[in-house]
Amino acid sequence: MVKGVDHIPSSIRRHFESLCILRKVKKGKVLRDILKSEKKSLRVTLIKIAKNLLIGNIPITRYQKDKLKKFSKTLRTIYKATDFNKQSLLLLSNDCGLVFLIIKIIVPVLLKILPKPVINTRKTFEVDTTQEDI
Image (cartoon, rainbow, N blue to C red; front, top):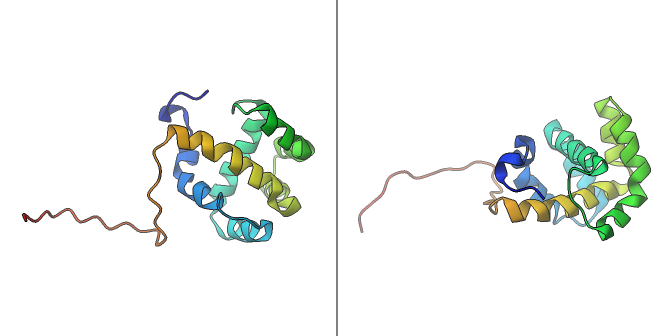
């Protein structure tokens, strides 16, 4: 099992908040539209996670392995493909079923390791550094 924040790639840490939000999406078409509109780096991160699931770098239970067997052919094709566009199309195929599984597997693992994110819908943070005495 991964033992600390230092072992988690920066791309996953960067997109942790987005992964937590995507975990709540219920429909494949909505998820596909969100992923297409988001930055390319989020899809690259999901492809890296898929490759690491196939290799076995991410510890998963037997139940999760059984769920992933349905997508084993797609995972192998993503692993062998070198073109990002082909990998991205494979990832988003089948109503994003593979993406749903990846998010369901990786987010609970990350929630145990990383602190919960502060979800901000405006994507900007304003910090008040002045303190007033009461």
